[in-house]
Length: 423
Ligand code: LLP
Image (cartoon, rainbow, N blue to C red; front, side):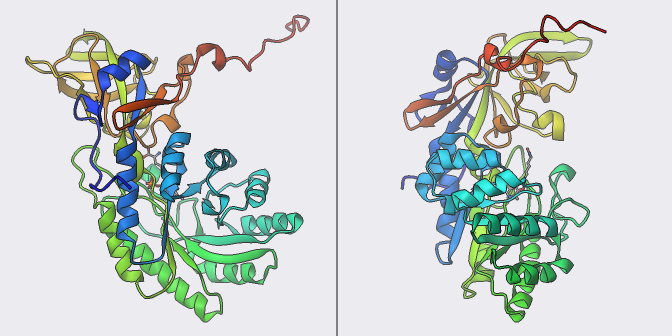
């Protein structure tokens, strides 16, 4: 296994691993996402190595970046996968990962999705409500199977992150309140078509400190002990994902610090620890490459209009998120404050604000920390084809998703028949 160093942020220089970014931009065009295989592997291995003293499974959260190449690279390391839809199930299976390494999370699983996951033989269903539990039991009975289950409890902990990505407060839609969990476990244990495996939670994303994780862990362990007293022993405890990364000047604990703190509390218990990290595996292992089209000035404001937009990276518009933006080849001269904006017809279409840069039209920029929740949240707004994705592997690069073609964007649309007249 190659990776050894702890994870760093990609995109500060003119190359990724051994490949020049100018070359990728010239060959593939912009906008384009670039990922580093080594950086992805390093981040996953950091969790795995630190947890080597206790039984564990690191299930990469596919929603962060679901490209088949990312799934494949992690699958080869032995990763498990956290999925939230039938679509993600198909992707992971298409990457030839054994279904037992998959955990199926999500607050609104539909019958067809659960049936497909049962058929494939996923390792666990993370169940979020009493109704879902009953539905799963019914579907498993119909299929003549026993569904492996974990209940996602809502530990009511403030993860102190952006309100849109806080999930472990009692007012959030996620999970089962701690108070109601024991009764539901008893119901699950009594069902012949369910097999109680574990307990899980996920309290939010982009967490900046260990404290909320450890508070959640303590609440879950208290429940694990009461359930053991009820005669319901659990094989695993899944603490979800959520560890933050550095976008600007944040200093979240590294994966090794989180893993070590958890391992210390769990050692000797014999329970398998599961984690579902997404952002901390791929976030800083990717970037968005974009070219400056125009420079313009409206009043006091200077704008750099680039060829990437909110449809490619919606995080700044949606969460007011900050992504570092740096020129691939820095210029000499006096910097000016620029609004870095895309071509989409909305004033919310910005990638960065007030960035002091020295720019000329045609310059190549990298928008850093764009490996997670970037391409996966992109859209075709303004009939913009979604960007290409590239993975660098040492001194080679591979196009792991072709740029979409405009004609494909409306290929499944149709006009009304000629004989339908307007009333
Ligand atoms: N497990 C569950 C059940 C989750 O809901 C999530 C993320 C994860 C694991 C992975 O969390 P991570 O390690 O990546 O923080 N679009 C937002 C982030 C949404 C996170 C949703 N759930 C963003 O761009 O910041």
